Image 1 (cartoon, one colour):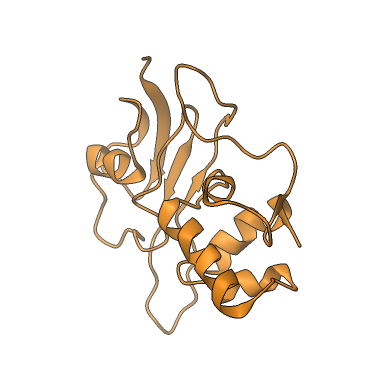
Image 2 (image 1 turned 60 degrees about the vertical axis):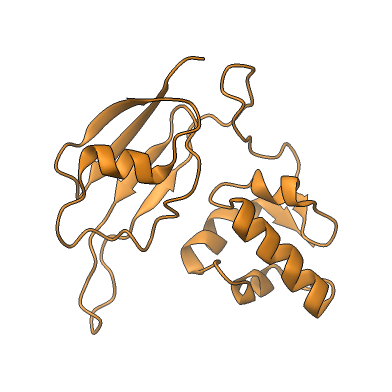
Length: 155
């Protein structure tokens, strides 16, 4: 299989393009580029699998009394599945939160298997989603992750 090429920028000692083996995660990219003191790692899902073309943006943390000025994020690259990458893809149509399988949810950017299971657990406990904003009640989905997937899901 071909290596993944990802870009890591921001609060790291060695920003730039990385060649990583297939199946690598955000943590591997951050580790290879060495996060600087004050880097916002809490804003990243370090367990998220990377796909070719992703960009990992490592921002800064701000004191508790100041809103963050630059957060961290993984900017998705091309997510079309290929035989070589075996990676997840953006869904061609919006994912229905009330009928989606764990696999369907896992294909969303920034949603790994753990968060996909948490979405299904919320649905099991609370019943059908009636608004997309209810995703914010799911453990592991904060404002940034909700913003990333809002336009990719439906009720």
